Structure formats: C-alpha cells, structure tokens
Amino acid sequence: MSFVTNHLINTRWPAKTPELLQLYSFPTPNGVKVSIALEEIGLAYEAHTVKLNETTTDAFLALNPNNKIPAIIDPDGPDGKPLCLWESGAILIYLAEKSGQLIPTNPGARAEVLQWLMFQMGGVGPMFGQYGYFSVFAGAEIEDPRPRQRFQDEGRRLLAVLEKHLENRTYLVAEEYTIADIAIWPWIRAAKLFYKADEALGYDALPNVMRWWELCMARPASERGLLIPDRDA
Image (cartoon, rainbow, N blue to C red; front, side):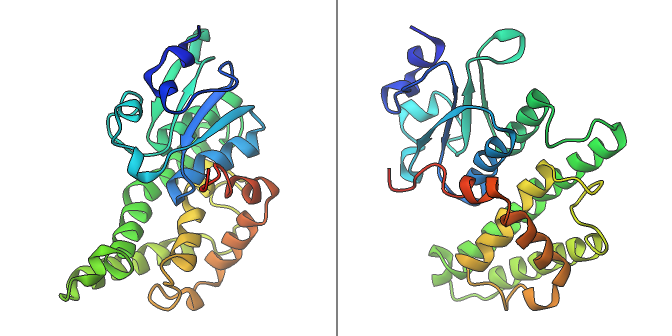
C-alpha cells in the first residue's frame, strides 16, 4: 500500500497509478490553472474529476478541509515525502518550484510573478466570481442591482490595471510565460464564455488584454489543460 492508496480520498477517487502526482479537480477557472501548469511543465500526473457537489464528501474533506477544488497529492514531495496541498495559488507555486519552470530564478522577477499571482487570488478571481454569481447564477434573482454593479465596476477596474500593464509586454513578467499568466487568463476566458460579460466588463476597450489572453490560450498546453479533468467523467 502507498500513501495515496491509504488516503481516504482513494475510496472515492481510486488512483490507477499511485506513484504519480494525483490531481483532484474540475475544469473551472481555478481548476484548470493546475492542469495547464502541469501540461506546461510536462510532469506525469493522474487527474480525477471531482464534481462541485462532491467537495463536501468525507473523502474529499480528508484532503481539503476547505472543500474546494483543486487539490493534489504528490507522493514524491519535498525530501521524498508525500505532500497533500490545496489552494490553486499554493499549488502553482509548489509546481513551479518543484520543476524549476514557470517562475523566474531572478529574485526581483520572481517577486513580481508572486505579486501578479496574488492580484489574481485576491482580486480577479473573487471579483469575477462574484460578478458571475450576481449576473448569471443564483444571485441573478436578486432584484437589487447594487451587488451586480459593485462587482462589475471592480472587474472593470482590475482589467484596466491589466490593460495598462500589458502595453508593450508579451506576458506579465519579464517577457516570460509564468504561473502569473496561468492564474489570470482562465478568468478572462470564463467571464467571456460563461458569464457573457464582454460588454459589461468592456472587453472591446482592452486590446492588450485580449491579445495577451488569446496568446496564452493558443499554447498547446493550454488547449490540453482546459479539458482536464474530463467534466463528464
């Protein structure tokens, strides 16, 4: 028996190859961050589809007590010991440092990558997610327009920050594709495809953001990672 096969999560999502890194996720903007990074890095892994209504099961809570995807088990973690990890930003940093990819070695550039990663974790993700809730999902039934307007305005403000920063830049930091890019662009995509927010968030006035997003999305690893794990599995 291995650490993975002994873990309670294995009772619901059994590992076929327990010596590989195990990804437990769903193809939401937060979920695909990790699958895209794994595809870019080329690290062998096994993906498990965790439906959003399964994150409160005992099996999943044993891995992530915060009941959110994604989460991983790396049987070959630091010092060769197994590591369980959740929170997409923490996972991105871990994978980048483990592989030596997707994060600069220069301390200043590395700090900038972490800055933009936190910009997503504390800003783009929560604000876009709340906009989606109040414009498309259950919150859309609320008649009071103020919550929707609040998150729309904040989404526009955050996009304006990105638009200015990406002027004359290919990627967010040091002309290098990093976990900062991977963290943010799936949210730009989600707002367009799932929230139909092009007009509300002013996409037509964001040529730099649109150019950058399309460049990131066209990468082969992005095309693969967006489909992992299989949402219908």
